[in-house]
Amino acid sequence: MATTFDRVMSEQRSPPEPQSSAAPSPFPPIADYAFLSNCHTGALVAPDGSVDWLCVPRFDAPSVFGALLDRQAGSFRLGPFGVTVPNTRTYEPGTNTLVTTWNTRGGWVVVRDALTMGPRLGPDRVTPSTRPPSDNGADHMLIRTVQCIDGQVEIELACEPVFDYGRTSVKWALLDGDNRVADAVAGDLKLRLQSSMHLGIEGGSVRGRHMLTVGEELYCSLSWAEGLDSPHNLDEANARMVATTRFWRGWLGHARIPDHRWRYAIMRSALTIKGLTYMPTGATVAALTTSLPETPGGERNWDYRYCWMRDSTFTLQALHWLNLDWEANEFMEFIADLEPNDDGGLQIMYGVDGRRDLAESTRDDLSGYAGARPVRIGNGAYDQHQNDVFGAVLGSILLHTRRSQRLPRRLWPVVQAQAECAARAWREPDQGIWEARGAPQHYVSSKLMSWVALDRAARLAEIRGAPDLTRKWQAVADEIRADILARGLTAEGVLRQHYATDSLDASTLLAAILGFFAGDDPRLRSSVLAVADGLDEHGFVLRYRTEETDDGLSGKEGTFLICSFWLVSALTIIGETRRALDLMERLLRAGSSFGLYAEEFDVATGRHLGNFPQAFSHLALIEAASRIIYAERLGEFT
Image (cartoon, rainbow, N blue to C red; front, side, top):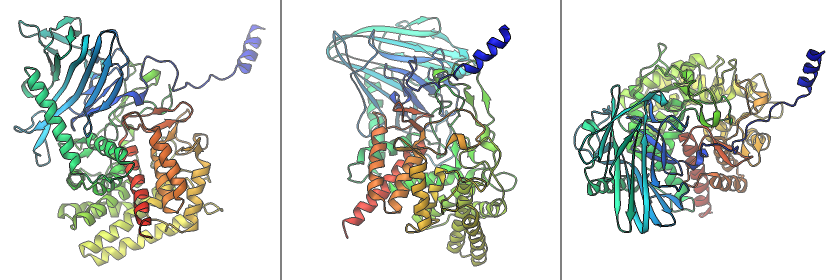
């Protein structure tokens, strides 16, 4: 009897409510983090002044501060004692240096945080370069300064690194009799904390407190540089901060930032993309972080600290549009250096050092951000079969060749190999642009990118002066185009997700951006408007309907910011300028207070989801902005 009753009650019990991204949590909202970078690694700083994410010495190294993924995995706070909510947080104009203003009952202070950069004084032995060395490089240290601008404020320092994603506690040792220098050691990794404050060891942490009065200033630095080089006094610390400001502003001064109402958004996106670039090789990581959830409390958590070939076309497009040709050239040299698969094709992603093996593991000892598990290290999609990679690589090479007015000799073998791989593979199903972990399908976006591969390869062969290859590859491009038109459109003339469904997929917007259809083609118009209406969620765009797509995962996800920016571009291309403008303004308002974007946006709560900051979102912002600005400028002459 009891068994029957329990079964009946179980059947009547409602399914659990999905977790809200705005649910009370000890984890700050993703978009509240500030991003620091030295173009070798990056850090995330929480509103309370705590560094909750830092991997050293490079982006994909294990974390030394990992509180982003588990509140016990290490952090480094510097700020007023007993106060956790600042007055203002902003970037020093034209830089990736964070400036935070605090007030307490006793006074006001300003905190500045930077992963410092400056003139190169010799070879970098911490993260050796495969590119020609530039005039500036990373100092391989985090510097934090505090200045009291009114009254007096008690400042607290609490540094508790836990190496290897929270697995390995450190052992601290004070080095000088004045207790201002301390080294943290575990295994082969050593950090040096140096400060104008007196320091004390408490277990696995170093702490310090000092009453700062008006006009007084203090500093601390955390170094992983060669020989643990550190500033010895406040003047040296400030000199490194000044050099960092000079570096970022000097770099930005070479960029072509249009005099437009979206100037700040474009500038911040440019600084973010530069900040996600690994200077020693020219690679760009997809995001700073791993395992920030796409579904609150869910399993859609991935490691994005690698370089995706898919991003290459959009990266080159943005860099050249911004007139940042040096960075574009460095990225192309990185691609030329990559080791291909046995068939000559490139993987869909590589490590920032070009390594191929990105085997995925989980860290089940970590709680995950707001309970989202598992935490993944590595990315199991690295060896997936994805046919879009060929088009991404060849599209980027054509863009670069047109801009530089030359086709580098070392890139021609890459062109040949990718074109031949695309010609062999395009008829096969794959996992698609979204790296679905369900069954392979004939995704339309993959067919579109295969067409891009052969179309761009034919144009490159013409530039090269190889007419036989031009004809050969153009014939395959025409065959792919015919296949898409025959099998990739619904009865209503709308591009479908894959050949076995009529479901929508925002990746088909690439047909507009990459020129598969002319802007006035009715099939393009129907497809763009179908996505705009059918994948809309409160004014933003889903990449697809999860209930209609076998992606091998559970849970609903947020709207994809890159898809929303793609829709801005596509609407502009088909002449729906007013609708494109409305969406663009909505997207700009959705950015964080720093102008940063994650991968997804939860329209129900206004929270960002997924890894942060996301290069693809910022690249798409620049692409969408450039389309509208070009249309506006053109309109001035008509």
